[in-house]
Image (tube, rainbow, N blue to C red; front, side, top):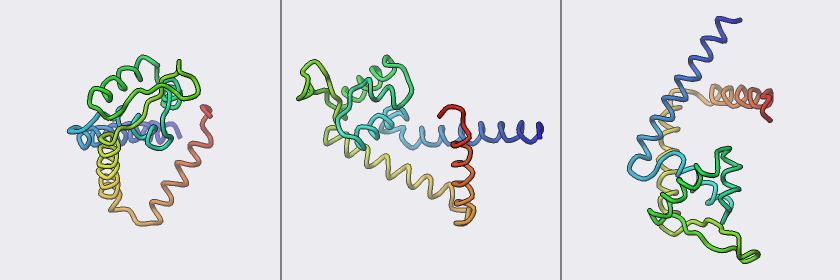
Length: 141
């Protein structure tokens, strides 16, 4: 099974590299992949501390700081003091940030629809089952 796993590893790497590049091109006019993910997290959860975003994205706090600085500069997020603890700064979407997030989510949805248009429903369900199985067997849980 060594040869098959080697081939599978190469295919995984190629597919994910392709998808990352495609999505980067799709978002290019708006935001980076990291900026999109931060907007998405805030959009899904409401105002968040940068430390919470860092933890959820599994990246360093300094990386989140550079991303959130860029998003604030573009007026996609605001920094606001927490009502519960004035020492805590929370990040929230602006109306422009919500608009850009919606546009990017639509572009991403169209991309995935186009990408998987050659697969039938059964094949897509097979993908789902295989990826769920892969995730459940991960040592990273």
